[in-house]
Image 1: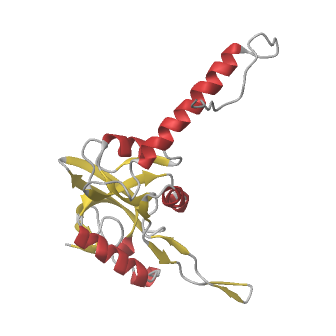
Image 2: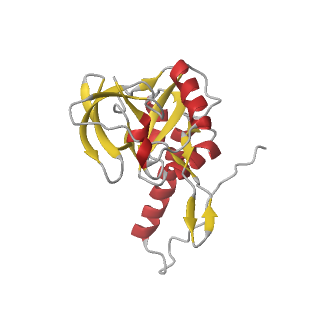
Length: 219
């Protein structure tokens, strides 16, 4: 006779120490966690179907954490990085660390299905999907190859090498997840050497803030 296997913790209904409402919430939370995990598995690299490169927007500083979570789940992810300049402190030279070329973005290679996008959207520290979940902006394979190649060779620029930009100028990304994408300068921060760029994506204006000047070029 086939045995039935039940998973979970046995509950004594008549035990006065058990709060039924709290128990119901616990079971609901556990079930929701399973649903989310299953959704994320739909974005895994071994899933059949046509895959595309698109970009997740994340909390600043949590790019690598999101990349690690996705890789552990079998999802192909990429955070283009560059080496920060060396810093001299108290007579010692501290080597620069790898940092994202553009803060707050993680590239993902997955099938664009409602389930996979829902799973990715629910990963901790993920804010949204560039272009929206219904019509995400996608990078072509040629651009992705160039992004990987440039990221491996990128060197951080200093203030003397920064290019001057003014609001209203047309520019293009020469590195990072939005390689070759064109936009218009909205504002420039001379102290931080960053700019806010407005890009037309799928018929809508999308702002990108804190874009390093060193990865932009005039069109």
